[in-house]
Amino acid sequence: MAYPGKLISLQPFMYKVYLNKKISPRVVNGHPWIFNNEVEKIEGDVKGGEITEVFTHDKKFVGRGYINPKSQILVRLLTRNKTEEINEHFFQRKIQECWDYRKKLGYTENCRLVFGEADALPQLIIDKFNDYFVIQTLALGMDVWKPAIVKALQEIFTPKGIYERNDVPVRELEGLKQQKGFLSDPFDTKIIINENGLQFYVDVENGQKTGYFLDQQDNRRLIQHIVKGADVLGAFTYTGTFEIHAARYGAKSVLGLDISAQAVEQANAHAELNGVQQFCRFETANAFDVLKQWGKEGKHYDVVMLDPPAFTKSRETIQKAIAGYKEINLRGMNLIKPGGFLVTSSCTNLVSPELFLDIIDRAAKDTRRKIRQITFQTQSGDHPVIRGMDNTQYLKFLIVQVQ
Ligand code: SAH
Image (cartoon, rainbow, N blue to C red; front, side, top):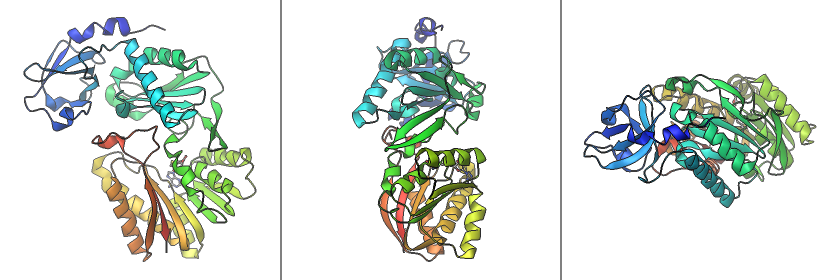
């Protein structure tokens, strides 16, 4: 494969971006994004995807990053170190650092190896599923480095396969097309991973996002004690990872619901793969309708688990998301026997942890139930949260007892 490194390593001297006199506190405090309206002038005939240097209005070096005039976020910084050049060695070094960090925390088999901005590699996502890697390059300036990123993965891991899941609409805002496919020799794209002693298929080609939600891998263990001997209902199960854990941890019966027939098929395959199919089954259903209906019929469960999708991707429609979270949690609580448990998640950074707790409190109030908090978590440590960088903390995971 060809490397853009040689050309791009010359470019820091070709492009210069000068910030407005008053730099936003966000940039001063280390956030890598520089918006169009924060820039006083640009030197150089920028097309997009190139490396640029960024300076204050009085010419003090701020950092080096990639630029795209088509995007509202004009520059995303890759380094604030004046002596650090952006070339293929840079990517090799950064990805090695990401791996060392995950290993240090004990994420060796499966992990989010690179979590974009939180790893100072803006808009790059790499998930590691044992010997296989799934990558997303969501901005033009990161996309041009794909060959260097693939080379780094090959050198550090000697992987069995690398797959690109760039079939993501956000790329179009960057002038990139949506695409997916092999970045290594072809391989069987349905692979098997181990998690907490269980086995799961990861369909890296056709699964949602990168194929598997690694961000809940630690939280899945937290249901261990509350599901013992319980009748468990899971909604928005995707491929049933929480439900299979519940079955293995000793639940009496487990029913999982998802609107996607493909997810349900894989969830049932997971039940068989883990030998729990006698008491763990999955059905295709719209959780909003079914939970409402079952509430009316007076059905009850010891544990209800909810892990809905984001409901919104923009601040403008945040009210819609809040209403959705409240409704589904209210319906979930209605189905819980007194003293049972609600396991509930939210995966959008647009809903803060405080707001999420508030939504759950309001749902409890409306159902006239008292709740006792057992644990409140975020995403697993391989998806680092950078303090002060709001969009790096996105997952909320709450277990409450519903009295
Ligand atoms: N708990 C899963 C991830 C869930 S992702 C895990 O840890 O792997 C959210 C899921 O909600 C998706 O699989 C999506 O298909 C499903 N979904 C979206 N809207 C739904 C609805 N109205 N009813 C049921 N499932 C829905």
